[in-house]
Length: 246
Picture 1 (cartoon, rainbow, N blue to C red):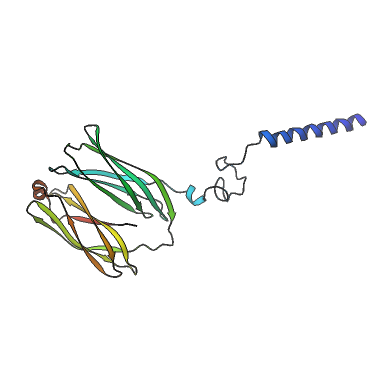
Picture 2 (picture 1 turned 135 degrees about the horizontal axis):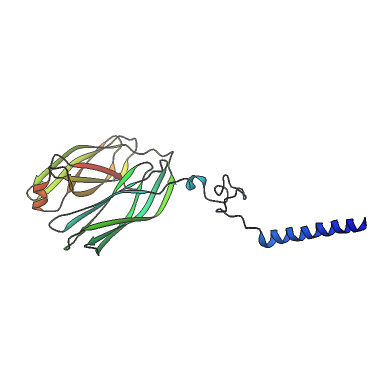
């Protein structure tokens, strides 16, 4: 009987030693990437001490389009369309255009932009080059997302658009109508120009400040002096888009 009792005690003691060793040296430390809800998370590996569950369900920004338009003068417009699929998160990000000529790097333009949830934004830069541009790429990074489901976005409308050809230059006139109850401090206004076959051939931009609530502010968008461009433009086909500048 004593042998059975002693044997049971040894088994219990051995099991305790093994369990203690496992807890001390072998048991994995809880983390936010172990696939286990084991440290107060709201869901597996998110919430509590881990990243917000909202952020783990977000999607990356999408690059929808990259274009460049080079005039005979060398003036070149670089544009890219970025889409934010996260409907209730505003995204702020850094971007960089890389300009190439026959595979060789010739210029870079970078900046900071943002796009509201479920919307697209056109990024715009310019560069003047002697070389012929053959390709442009764009990368974006350092994206930060901010929940904005309770933030009302100003409603802007582009009105009174008129494109005028004046010798070797083309100018766009128009106004931004603010249909919101708040002043819009700053807004980018970008014009896209097309030829008579409907092909987009250039873009230019201006910025407006302090568009009044339930009011309008006029804008003028200039283009470089270029006779070939001016002759090719269909002045009835200009499109204008806006982008809030924070």
